[in-house]
Image 1 (cartoon, rainbow, N blue to C red):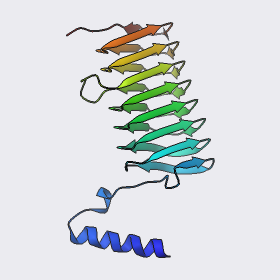
Image 2: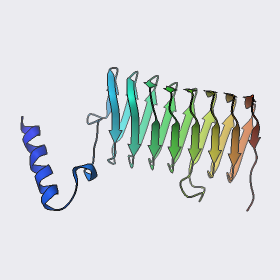
Image 3: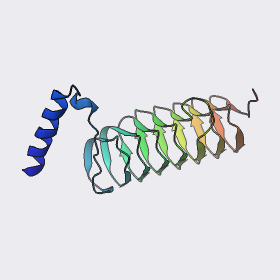
Length: 192
């Protein structure tokens, strides 16, 4: 009851100050971890850390401007986006009918995930090559895998069906044993 009153007070103050409720920070991981359960969506746009293990998300996961984010052994029925996070690790997670995107993070580890009917994109926001990316042993069915504009990118043992694997404009690239069945693998370091 107290939290409801506090939320109403904060919402009124924001409305009086001209700030919409959509601009208010949201943290669906207040305890720092979520283990098990089913959710419509998970959104975090505060500078906090969160570990998520063994959940089912029906729509989307959006993590933005957080400190550390880890997701392990989960199912997302939509988009999984991790943007401007200090450290991000997505491991053994299935994304069905959406994209797995890590963008503009300090470190991004995308390891042993399955994406069905979507793409994996591990990119630095501005192509200033500041993100360190580890993209290893992922499976993409009917989609693409793109690892672009990172300071350092390890792209190894990924498999894609009916799509392409591209690694462009990475400052340091270590790429090997990637396969695109029904598409092409184009992983090379681009020099400006």
